[in-house]
Image 1 (cartoon, rainbow, N blue to C red):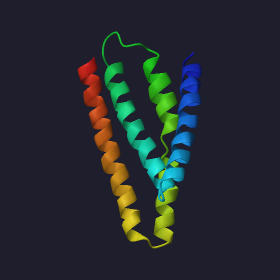
Image 2 (cartoon, rainbow, N blue to C red; image 1 turned 90 degrees about the horizontal axis):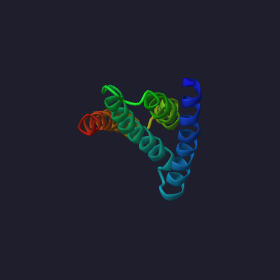
Image 3 (cartoon, rainbow, N blue to C red; image 1 turned 90 degrees about the vertical axis):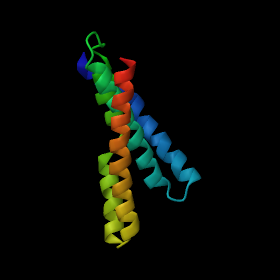
Image 4 (cartoon, helix red, strand yellow; image 1 turned 180 degrees about the vertical axis):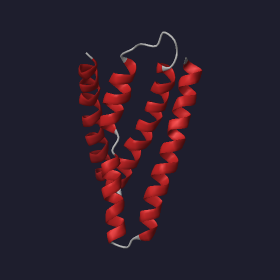
Length: 123
């Protein structure tokens, strides 16, 4: 049953990631990087929230596998962040290289903390 919950969450998370990336590419010059940043920050917030709520007594057992592992796992993308950052390294584009890593790590970390805090308040 858990594998089905993960798959169901991923079935929503993966197309959401694809659509966010397409939207960002269509509207912004740095679209691919922005799309990756958006899904990673939003996914970090949602995962923080879900983890906090899941720790509470009486939390639904389906929440973490469906939303945390399935949806957030399919929505977020470390591999794309790594490749985009490597391209900056290869091109010796140092400012975008540092900015991409710094923004992703700092905003993702802050989003996870904010999500966890929000989940603690809601629980």
